[in-house]
Amino acid sequence: MNILITEKLDESQIQKLHLLYQNEWFTKGRTLEDVRVMLSKTDFVFGFCDPESGELVGFARVISDCVYKAFVFDVIVDPGYRSKGLGHFIMDTVFNHPTLARVSHIELYCPEPLVSFYEPMGFKTRTSLLLRREAENQG
Image (cartoon, rainbow, N blue to C red; front, side, top):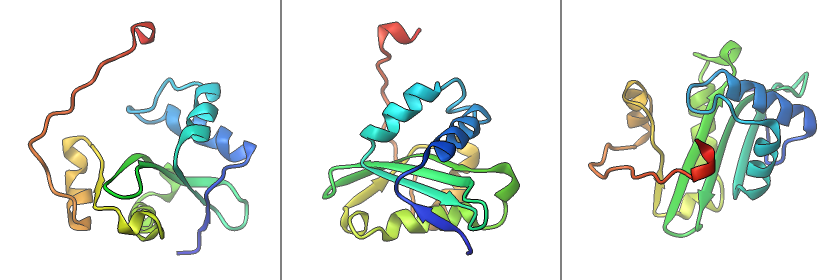
């Protein structure tokens, strides 16, 4: 796939990520400032860019202890690049990262309609429940 991969987003790519977030149910409403903070505190950032324009067209991030657990968040593909294999390329890039390749468990959570996308990559549905405590100031 003719895509450039970056582990640090420039300002225009951060702004594009913020725009991509506004189109997804799971990230809609995130502020640009919060996205900047999130990126600075994330262990592994994967930006996928058009090689000619440098525009961000795909993204994923991972939080990990680098031994036992890695958790993938925010896998997003620009609508104009969907159904071209970029989602699989993103996940392959995560799996093959030199540090993450040795982690015992790579995990993510997704809605039911996306299970069929992730299962062929080796993800299996578990029966654990996701528990969430929301901050009082988050509404």
